[in-house]
Image (cartoon, rainbow, N blue to C red; front, side, top):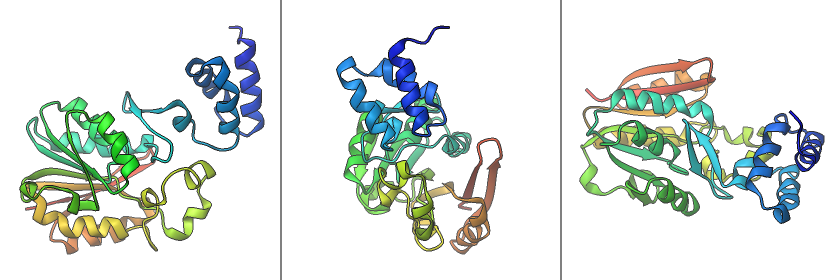
Length: 256
């Protein structure tokens, strides 16, 4: 298949900047951009801006999720979190998506379980604005973790999914520039060992969960022993789920 000259030139520029998937990215940028805007978008990509921020969307669990500049880009490995949450939830379950970012996790859950009573929350106003676009039928709240949620949910949450930041603070500098420089630090930095936010979520989770309810969060493989200890200390029954193909690890705590 012959590649159009404009697309071929974009491929060359992206490849020269070290983009591993230059052909795929070029095709998306050429298809998305007006001709007058293409050079600017390519220059921004070459400078390190995330492709998803330039396109205005990210593909996640088979859906296009609106993603604005400065908002955390959903990772494909987080589809494990979605899969496990869907497996736990009844069609009429109360589901809360904490640290929701763009609302990608909540949107994927709602697409599979359209009857759930879905709430989402994030501390970052730009993320909340994105989440409200992606979750038009859910209640999206702005605030710090459980402080954002209505008190009426206390003791009623069947599935609490939290895509918490879990990169250790000292490791932020080692992340790819497109994440380190263009995504909010609050969505990346999990404190000295990466588990600060997870600890806060798990400690409060029992008072928000229904009987038999579960809290789930993603973590790094090396953090699993400490994460399991956090879940156990909160009086929850722990379990760890791994998917080697996705390179993903989820820790779960069940109440009762």
